[in-house]
Length: 204
Ligand SMILES: [Ca+2]
Image 1 (tube, rainbow, N blue to C red):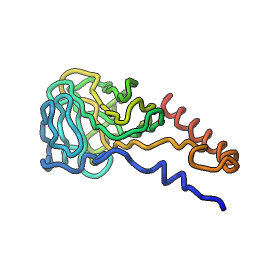
Image 2 (image 1 turned 45 degrees about the vertical axis):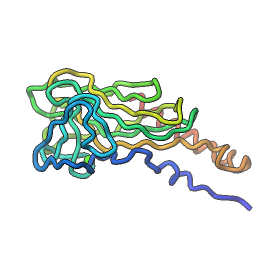
Image 3 (image 1 turned 180 degrees about the vertical axis):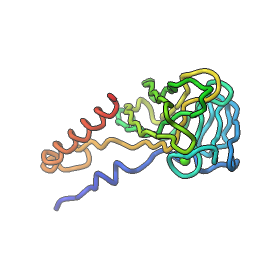
Image 4 (image 1 turned 180 degrees about the horizontal axis):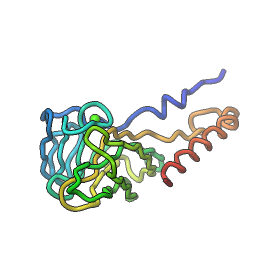
């Protein structure tokens, strides 16, 4: 008898809670609310520097709320979740930029976890509050502990920063541990294609 594992459903399990920043004790309404360092007002997250919690000020990527990773200066946010040492994880997030023309054209931020990190950049040219142009980015890390802190930190100074929404973390399935060896041979090809796609995305 063969046990079938739906790999797609395994991949879709999001380990991040409140990844769209919709749940909070505060309501940014039609504008925004500035949060200082160490704020836990957005459920499940802690700010690591001053950010703006955005309501209707501009179009969110998902739901009605998003973040500006710069309030009056460089800010950031993080969440800690359970992980398995040596397991690979895929981080997916939507990135855009505060469209105000007084800010810099290129907005960059650093995503980091498990001692690894990468900088992502968004160009605000042609964007507006009604046309944010949100782009989905993917990054991978390998866990080094039983819990991991995922951080998004702005890489620019002053106000008008990179904007963030729709964060998820999913495990990258290891075919030999969840499937019988016979099935793994057939499954292996598809798995390699998936890895290749992920890699191509992160190279962009
Ligand atoms: Ca959202």
